[in-house]
Length: 242
Image (cartoon, rainbow, N blue to C red):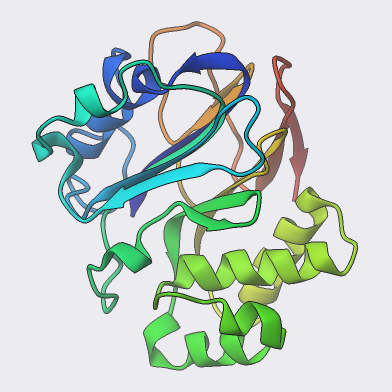
């Protein structure tokens, strides 16, 4: 499993959700409160952030445990973002620990993270799902992760004209037509966030969605399982059943 979060709204310090909040991602990585599998998330982390005035996001990924990285705080001093996606990884069985397999994944202005796993991905399911991708999206795969394939499936549907929430839910349903899995996803284009709760914990409040609340703000609420969440900048989340 993993812990992940996403934000869209007025510019914020990137260090706030990663390091500074009372239950920031670094604390969720080492001491998760709602994680169903594994006691921590030691297999690296990544963050994608969107700065005002830049057309494409910036990304940082590593395979080091988030809480053991020297200089991480200083790396984000003065860095502000109007949107971001961040994830701390516990690698799924059978998938290598390689930076290419760490979320968030990026394609153009899109970024993506999966908290969970596609069952049987390394035993034939992955081959079946890759075979269904367009040539463009298949050739763009960089690693071996189920997360990246699900991202490509979603982008294929967006390329065909589907709205982001519809595309993500349809991609999940396509996976579920052949296997099971925990499929909590985050999809961000720098202006909107779409998230799903399928088998893992997910919480939301204005501008935010996260595996676990990052602080004690009373606005956080738990998203019901098998829901899709849409976050608009500075607005309360919209939650619909899948």
